[in-house]
Image 1 (tube, rainbow, N blue to C red):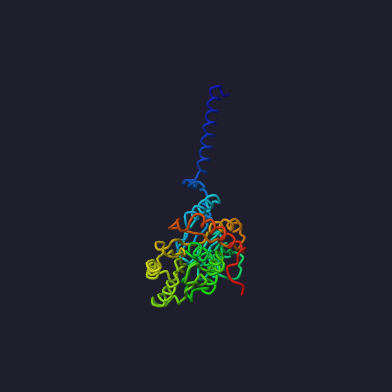
Image 2 (image 1 turned 135 degrees about the vertical axis):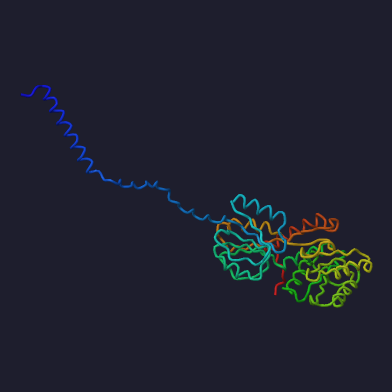
Length: 344
């Protein structure tokens, strides 16, 4: 019979045998080389390319002749600020096709290839100041600066300041619309005084108009000026095409011969020093009238600009009363109440 001590030893032996067998079984199942654990890749954020930003909306001012005065620049600067636009100024008449970001292009003088420029940018509205006749286009609006209007008001002012109605004009015979300008000048002068018959001799109907080719030499124009001097003409309108220093000096030199002051009226294309007054067009009111519809994408507008006295070098001769009278007539002319040309 087994004692309690023997039973205890027998159980301990069985436990050790079971433990050895279990260790052997687990050791056989375990591989000799551990399988490498692949590294954990941390996902990175996907880089989305940024969308290209569209160019800012803008208004382009094309000023090839430095015609933008302080009033026009102030208006355009204020307008573009209020509308959230960029104002871009260009001095070259060669304007490339514009994209949709260009809302309005303003030409202060008409380019030679106006129709081509406007056609090349159908999504842009154009406002052009000039004396040009082209077919109507849906994205073009015109500020009319008619040469005959300026000649009419040139005749009006020249006659207003003339002594004894003795007024004249020098207009090249081969200038653009030369016949119309001469006719408008005469009508503007006679709008002041009708028949314009002087009180003193020699008595002829005024105004007198001298015409030669713009390419004529000084001798040809000197003959015209000599004829004026014989009739004691003391107030002249001089077309800018022939407002050379030599001709202006010759006209001013008549003062000793006619015993009277000589006053010269011209346009803003001429040098101011020799002139009593220079005339031009008041573009700003017409621009303000057209611009809102142009910004809204509407074209086909036509507004006539009013002639104004741009420079007055002698307010004793061109007095405030004469200026007020000039402005009233110029307003009626721009409104179409006065027709500058004679009825055919």
